[in-house]
Image (cartoon, rainbow, N blue to C red):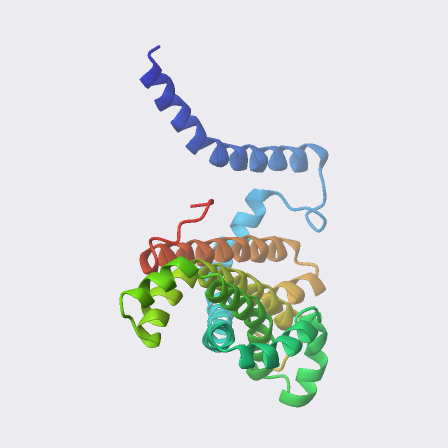
Length: 264
């Protein structure tokens, strides 16, 4: 076999191995459940989960809860992205703003944000507002810190070269500093999106007046022992998270193609 053929087979194996590993896991799961006669309430077979998921899609239950959760995710993330990037840039461009904001970020960033849910329910009630606010607060900190770090670490040589060529402060900020900080900003947005998804689902599980969303579907299915629905919801959540993150990475490459990272 030629070296080129070996490389082609190696590439095919590299691409197919992740899918094959998932298929093998599902087949093994199905065989063990059937062979050992495990009760569906403890561990349903993948075929039962797929049937339940298909039924939920046909009657519209899954689409409704996924749609509600997606709207909440993007509402909280948008608030965090706008405010986090704005404050991070202000901190990076102004030492006074950085000094004032730094003590607040140092104090509030380590605080487990999920612990704020009871307080936010008291202040905002159990409607949509508290879910969006808790997710926005959680995503805000990685975004603002990544933006600030990116602005501060902009290449001093490029800034000096721009000054030597006669660029004014505004031109340096928008043509040199912000593009140089873009990889850090995009990384912060990815981290922010991840925590937004987690906190929105957690907030839906903890409580609220609107009985909707993937978190509510999960906790409600668990309370009535509908294990197939629990697994179906987890599968959809995993796929939803992966799709959102992959779409975000695709968008990042379009916005800033120079911001290549090791995992791309």
